Length: 232
Length: 110
Image 1 (cartoon, rainbow over the protein chains, first blue to last red):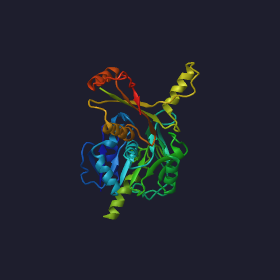
Image 2 (image 1 turned 45 degrees about the vertical axis):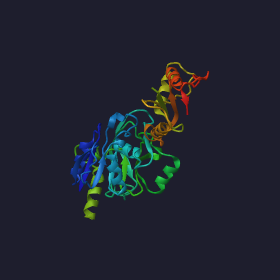
Image 3 (image 1 turned 90 degrees about the horizontal axis):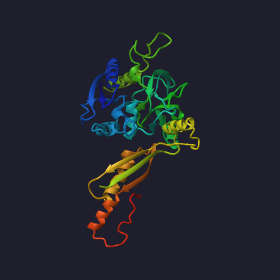
């Protein structure tokens, strides 16, 4: 399972995403925004960061990158695509996911270990979870407020496309506590929190068992790796 | 050289945290007459060639598809700003003899 991680100017978590892929048993492939070549990968990750310094709008300029032509085509053909934080913003700007992300309602950047409910366990990136399961992964953003028109929100909810919801705290003013969504087919998923920062004991969120032992993010990457094994 | 100004604002129904922060600062510094502030963006596009229908259509398209995100923002104005000197030059080139040759307002609005 070769999973491409695209680096854009200002990406920060591309190396972390590559590491998460490796820990999940996949082979990470570093891809470059300026290329038109997906190098034959089986899945794609658009990592977090501040591409182009959030100029224009977060993710907007990156969504116009050369490689995005191929990303959109691959996503529409069913390839699993995960957008994390800035990658989620790019997917909305590219029209692969609905809605948009605006500045946090409280006006401040926020960084915390965030509890989420996995609402949909049938997407390409959540099959290793159970619907209703609560997971804890880091969240760090300044523009993470998810918004969409009321009828769009109703449709997303009705079609089971709200994949993750914030629990206990709504950290950024996202409507209906939405932390992540999918496209209709379920192969494209975007979320603001960072699963790639909770994949290795010693470097994840605190748990009741031990400090920094949380690895709840690993399931995102094993979901897509195991799916590939089943299909092979 | 004409300048095209595109104004983009966050959608009216959305909370504008930047504007809210500025409104709070105004209130704190005693400027109590202002009940709200909203912050948008102004883009100034310069061109070398003429403003024609094709260009206007192109500007409309990039304003809606690139300069703004219609999910969260509205394009509230597109203005073609031409200086009076340029208008005079255009009129001279056109051989205009009408008295109101300079009458077109700088900052024609669409």
